Image (cartoon, rainbow, N blue to C red; front, side):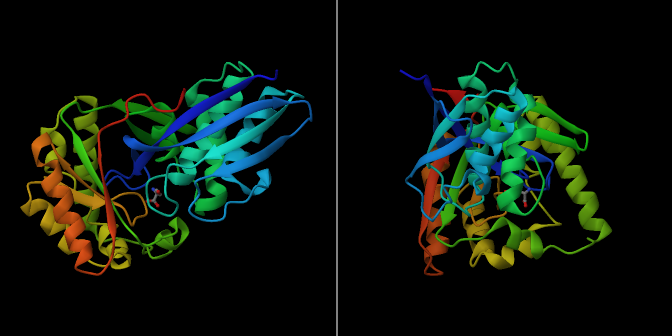
Length: 309
Ligand code: HSE
């Protein structure tokens, strides 16, 4: 029988508030799975896609998982082919790194199937190729945490320099996804060419503090710095009820609420486990007031990243 493996890749929060395109965080509770199986044909095929909430191409050259998987297969110079099955656990266009998780799982699966010896760090390049195809941008703040787990910092894209920052033990994350779809490319298109110096300085200070928070496993350095003065004022216009949701979350005890990635998912933070339900209801309620359904997921940091299951 041909060899087959299954891989899980977690959802991720791009930006972690002010860290636009540089900070990312893997989270528990939602993720994609990929089953990879050896075949004799010298190519990648996608044999099945399950649980997808929209049409995803089964053409490997037009599919984020397929592109990432093929890129690893070429790197390994193998003539054995791979049949892939994608099991979606993530809603698309939700700001939770859906395409990145598929790409990370595809890249990881092919390497694991052939005992390729590539590290998760090596695979970031391959996964980014897949993600760039659908997201209209080249950034690593979803694929890096999805592959490595915990929080990550992208220092440079060319050459690619990523640092794993670690986790914060006390951190509880409340993800709320309103039922509207925002494509990353559209959410990037609303951003201005320049930002005011004041917003730049605040974002810089907050990003530095959040980086220190994860490297030191220190919630106090995170809790007052989850504020984005540069990107949020523009992207929030795409999310009806965003500022009401933020206010409701903070009134319910959250230490902050920001847009996850390109949106529309928002995430709030607390270090008090017993407050999570109240915060989740407050945010969901704020979206209901706009006649928008919303789904909450109580989450934590996924420290492991992409893995074989
Ligand atoms: N950093 C990217 C953005 C992440 O915010 O556009 C997309 O999920």
